[in-house]
Length: 370
Ligand code: CCH
Image (tube, rainbow, N blue to C red; front, side):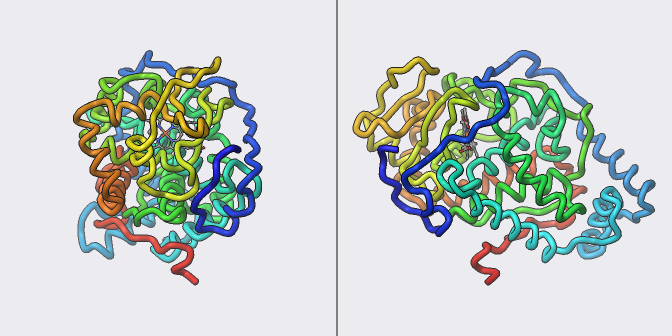
């Protein structure tokens, strides 16, 4: 790569600074977005309640929708346990063990991309949650429906088979955790371990079925403009400020021609969570890249960074620009707003009664465990 990598807090991340081989995947070579069927309505999340009922019936577990917080936490944890068929009720300490295991996996990426699996795991958590439709109450992280075709094969999810595979290893070790909890916790670990803010998180998602899978077209199409971005995120229930905060996650990771058709990282430090995405949008001159791939921007100076058309609307749209400027100037503000919006994103589609704790938890970073 022609650019210098600036800040990598992890030793594992330091291993690869120069050579950045691309990950090959077996999935289709170009991301084909679909907006068709975006309004189709799969089964409502009320089905979750039937899932719970089934879990109780199947596992003999006892479940309370109300009552003291402790009793309710234990009872709701028992539902997940009954469903997984293992005789044990996980505590926060057990989820912390899962967190720590994911942190190890993120760091053990060898020569993959920029030396971390964090970005792709973050993307899995976002794509698992960002299918939510507030009108129908469908989609979101509850059922982990990306396990099923055709959702697994939606163009937007190209390359996420890698992330799901990594999470499957963790699932084998901690069979009691639901896929929705595992994938969203993976997003939390990714952000926190790459130097980002603490992300409040709590368990309670249950595994759904193929019939709960969402139609194609619910995730954003990077070639579009601000009205598309608004339509997609407003459907999830977010406002302009939250949209801008969430897209700042593009400080991390990179695009892969083999997955989306786009190519390159957004920042010089793709494994460190910073407000650089916004800073670079304002500080660099962005020009259209001359190539045979889809329309994307590159920085005029080094030609090593990229912006998607949807990223660029964060400065070309007046309302978005106001927030992007504020985040470019104040990293703490970005961290605070990202944490709140991302935490909410991860809970989309999960009925409140299903959460095993009344308030989200703060999980410890791997370093804090030592
Ligand atoms: Fe994103 N994202 N994203 N994104 N994304 C891509 C990669 C990452 C859009 C399109 C793309 C969010 C919002 C949007 C990450 C997190 C978030 C890629 C390249 C495209 C295209 C995929 C590839 O080729 O591998 C669009 C469009 C939007 C909104 O309009 C939000 C919100 C988040 C998280 C909160 C992360 C992380 C990556 C890097 C993945 C990797 O493998 O490095």
